[in-house]
Length: 97
Image 1 (cartoon, one colour):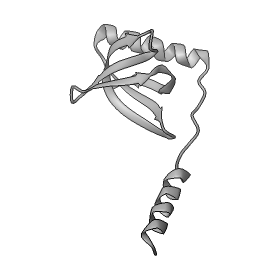
Image 2 (cartoon, rainbow, N blue to C red):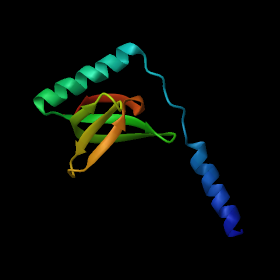
Image 3 (spheres, rainbow, N blue to C red):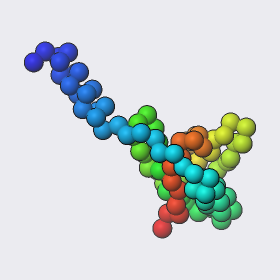
């Protein structure tokens, strides 16, 4: 096969795995918000599931700062890297045990 064909086929396989972003209702958003506030107060680790470019991603981190103006959450992972998550990207959050 030609290299161009191989590249197209690999891209096609990746696109097949993509999923649509779920729509959360107000109760789910409020539960996530309360969990983030509680985790920030008690410095608890959270497992975040978020949506990025058609895929679900998961990370374990600490909530560091909530930016209300930009509608994003700044989190610190276990490598002390700061990650910015938009609120609209967050799908699920739960305490890390």
